[in-house]
Length: 463
Image (cartoon, rainbow, N blue to C red; front, side, top):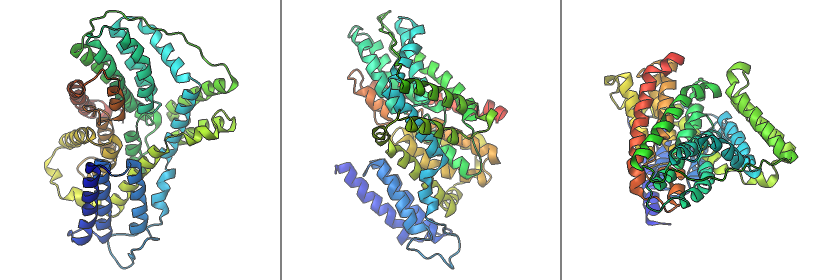
């Protein structure tokens, strides 16, 4: 255990004990236990005392132990909390958002298995020619498209292998080498906002909205976020070009496409296309996106196109992480902890737009130093409680604040630790932290401003 992890362990234990020893006026006994779990999770997530998915598992176990009817605390005769079955917490592993991500993971991993991702990259890059600036745009567009349906981390890892030979063909002193190395993680982060399955913070926010009775369709989310993704992709491209202008005008690319033609590969192409089509047309046929997500799981596993070994390789830790965030939100809401925390701040003195500004800015800052998913998990219960307390307007306010938090989290990319794609890009050896800090700060601030502008001028007109 490192020194940082030991510090995190000590602070986490202290944070867990404090609400148990102290009496916070107006907070129920269950709320005190929920605060203990919240502080423990927040510290462990910040310091990565244990793997972040392990913290999520610990959150769920602690909730079962301290807040469920099967736990060790007898809440009969105590006001302020009505405990429910342990299934309320452990059931988050079967939340529709978890199933949606599971379907996305199966599609993504199957695409890698049959080289569909690499061939799709070559096909999509072909129209961008050999100019350095347009190649950068092409790389960003392809990365964004892939990361909208695949893990941002997996997309970046694959695209890094694409850019390494491109960088090798450029002169060693060409500033565009830095721009091309940065364009991949930035595009992956931006592309992830476009769909509900693009990045875990989207899932955390959508799940929290579902708990409030507000269902966000796959196509509806794309209508809210896709225009922002496109604009920010162009913004990031221009920022990188200006900070790292190309000295080499042209770079030759090998774009030979060799699609596999085996039965399993063809089945994957059909399944991929059908699933995406059903997702984006949810508003027409009415089939929930989480139900559609079962289609690739069923088809690819029944046909053995996706084997037992492939299933074992799925990123199950991400599903645990999301489930822990959902469970944390449930306990904070049901025990009254979220309302109690929000009630201590004079939100009534702030206008609706200032509330959104505060949550957007806090999300952006926290996400640069914490996992984006962790940040969304910590903030969304508090934000939704604000809506129910009247600081924002009803269902409309819930969706607005949810979008602001989810999207702002994805624009945090100033450090290698801010997001896994950044760390992967730094491993190329082309980048230094100062390059990421400058361009990431500019893009993050522009992204936050655009999110707030959309919350005022665009989303209210289409919700």
